[in-house]
Each structure stands twice: as structure tokens, then as C-alpha cells.
Image (cartoon, rainbow, N blue to C red; front, top):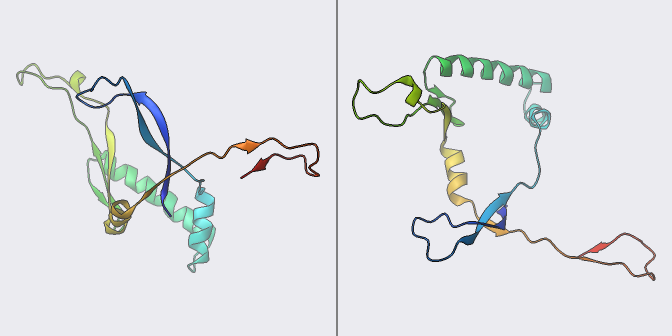
Length: 148
């Protein structure tokens, strides 16, 4: 299924603006949300584990993931991918001038595994268009607006 996007008018983000102050850019839209409970239930349906077992395992995995990341380790999660906590800084002219105040906030870096990389590389986009609602006429039996 293609990724759905809509167009948004924003400030020109190109390095060489060509007289255009604003341009239209694509912005993806989520088509829904899969909750943690739904995900656990689906995993449970396709395995011998119960939904509660799946939740407990994922909760424990997150606890250990946090522990290893806090220690500065890279955490490999098989085909899912790799997690790493990274931090960069602004520069200083000399080693003596550098201080921890130049550090930026830490970020979580996720490098997807092969299957997720393939999904990213093969993803296609499809423009999402809002359909106009036609006003109902008094002759209609149904008073709800019609969406075509």
C-alpha cells in the first residue's frame, strides 16, 4: 500500500531560493494507528505466546535496551535493527575552549534491519485528496451528506 501524502505550503527550504518565498511540499499522512495492545494481540495470535506474555517480553526488552543505551553500548535487535544513543556538539577553535555546554541534546539513532530497509527503498507515494462534500437536497431520504 502506498504512503499517502498531502501538500503543504511552507517557506522555501532550498539553499538557493529562486524568487519563490513559499513552495508546496509533500507531507505524509497516517492512515491509522496500531496500538501496543493490538500489536501484542496480533503477535499472540500468530504464536504460542499469550498477549500478556508478549507485553511482558517487550516491556523487559525496553528496560534492558534503556540500560545498555545508558551505558553507551550499541544494541543489536536482530532483523529489527540497531539502536544507539548519539550526541554531537557545536565546534570550538581549541581543545581548551571546548566545554560540555557545547553539547547538543542526545538523540536515539535507529538503523533498520534488512527487511525494514527494503520497505523504505520500495515505498511509493500516493497523493491524498479530500473529496468535497455535496450538500444534501430536501428530496433525499437520508439527511447525511454524501461523500463521493
